[in-house]
Image 1 (cartoon, helix red, strand yellow):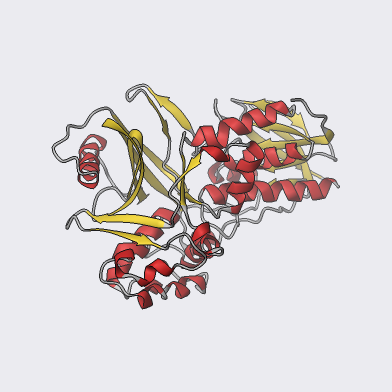
Image 2 (tube, rainbow, N blue to C red):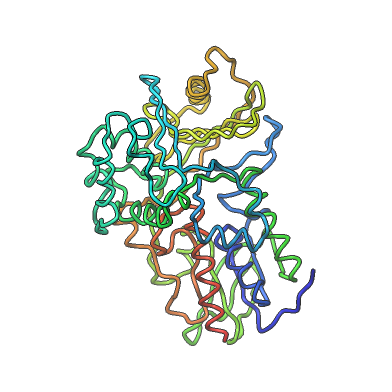
Length: 422
């Protein structure tokens, strides 16, 4: 499907989720988009690939999102890929303590109000419904507040719920992580009650839901997509971006053209004079393991006192995540694989099962560090140059660097650019 395009070129640099979100929103309006990507593939830190050791398609990172994520819902509706998103029909989050083998489920139900939490079996161990009301501290947190400073006084609920949620959502140790950002996620999640807080996964893989449909959508609408095209420099003249250097070639930017920069902060910083970007990052380690048998049951489980923080089971692959990994942390990946397999076996009641094919992926700069000082460096989408707009999960979005936090700034950038062209 080729649609007529209107106006002058809009140059979108970076085909991660922020860039794809911006490009598809603009293409939906019939804008003329040129998309540049430095690597051989789109998706950035959110994509799938065929692992030859496991002989399975796996995600380069494990991502859990929520039914109420507005930007994601708009994005997949545009692409027509929402049917490949899967998850339970209740806002329930199973947990297990690796040390004690104790299991519990935090179940907020599926209605407007979380009535199931009134029952002890639907809450964290040794907690009362009044303990859960402490969430108000997060919802009213100041920018300088950390999660641990506000929530650690109730040790039982902190260890069983707030700490694992904070580590998963913010990918930052809770004693450093911004309480205001965690509060922003919870506010969005529960704005419609439990129905907007249903856990969701890309059932067929991240690329099948978020990346491949976006590339098809763009190509169908005449978008130029270039891979292995790296931004080397931007030239500024007369208070605007005047040219780009892409893989050594000069791309002039006429006065009526716009640029959206949707690259990681470490790529943006060298080409943005005088613009602050977050300097600290936290890593994530993901492990993927082939199981002895396939299951039709989707499993999402938080793990307390284990090496893994979360376990996801789809088909015959179990994937685990270690979040908030510091560059000071040292892991021997071969030893770590056996420890993670031990977590999986206990969680899935598969003790004494031999470990089969697996893959351990370490991403040292998975997200920015969401500590208040680092987050204060997140720049706005608008820049001092009227034809340059920023997009990325590291920009100021009011959200942490999640999938929602990447798709939303792409949509925002598209809106700002469209307004500038009107």
